[in-house]
Length: 489
Image (cartoon, rainbow, N blue to C red; front, side, top):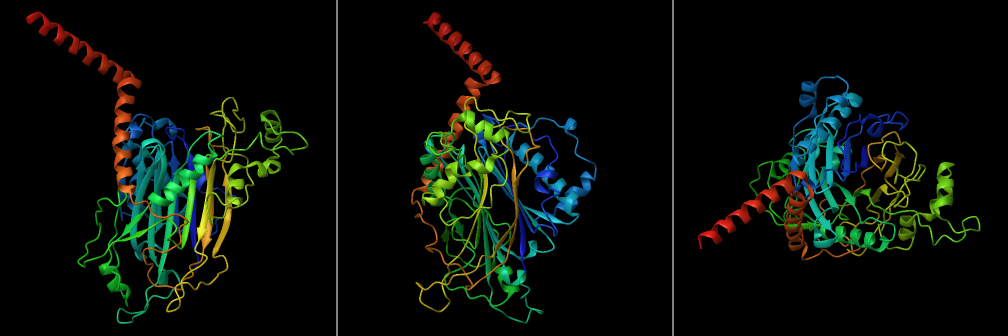
């Protein structure tokens, strides 16, 4: 049995989302024959400044969408009825309601809103299908990290790690509570990322990816070192669904647990299936392409190619493709064919007109996937590995030019994955990641949070009309008080 996973990413350029999301998340030509079992939606530049700098919210829920959608009814979405949502929590709820409406309208099935999380400009939503997934979830964790100056988080990553009972997916659950079997995990990880901007910053983007691998770490407390589970009922009684708001920080259990547990640390690579997506910001390389029709590729010739919709001719000019081939980023990841136009940079309001005045176009918005190609043989030499055929089928991978809210175009991908397992429980310290865990990740996250709030306060005081008025008023009051004190003395 396979699982269908739908992933969508959209850099909304700090704009209020005011468009029906159906053609993005459920396009009619995407060959969706079965309902997605897991739906993951990521946004970049989700909130306007300065309120984005105060954004660090995470919610785990086990509430079904059906009751929420029933209250909304089946009326179509009307952009004209929107109120502007400036607060981050309000934006999260507003966007979540849009996604939930679309899911219900296109599936007519019950889904659970599993995760709603944000960090500065990033937002991540996860929904799971009640019929096939929800009751088999063993553990859920959220982790975040900011990259760039002072680790503020305007660029960075938000990740979700989901552990599912793979026996249930494969139809190997016991028929009765008295029947026992060896529990097998299916570990899924989803990372929404936003990397360094500007065409010349290829090296920094590679470093941002490295930082996310080093500092986006999950703290799993579900199993002890010597855990040996024999039944689904016992495992579900003992497990906790955990939420990590900060890397290695406080965790709040949503389900009660009475067993003592030992912490394990997992990178994003410690997964059976890993999806890395977002505004990765790699552009089309210009100056270094010397053999483009015997001429150097420049903005003018690039625009000619794009206007003729001959983007296949410039795939070799994609910075990210070059960096992956050279082994500098996204180690072990795969991607579908780029059979769509570059997703950036467009005139806002335009379907196909590129704005090249200050930015180089590129396939900035991407969805990559990784699957565990080697695994330890149970009961054998830890160094022994076994190769497997690909358990991932990419059904569709496309952009959606009709969305003109932003200078980016949204992208979606539909996958079918087939769980394949040789192990029962993933042990911490597995050598899957190409980078070591950053021992100072908690300190960097704390500094990033403090820096983000300082920047937000300064931006509000000196970059907004209300803040400037407040600053002037405080200044006037201060000068008046000083004048009074001087007069009295």
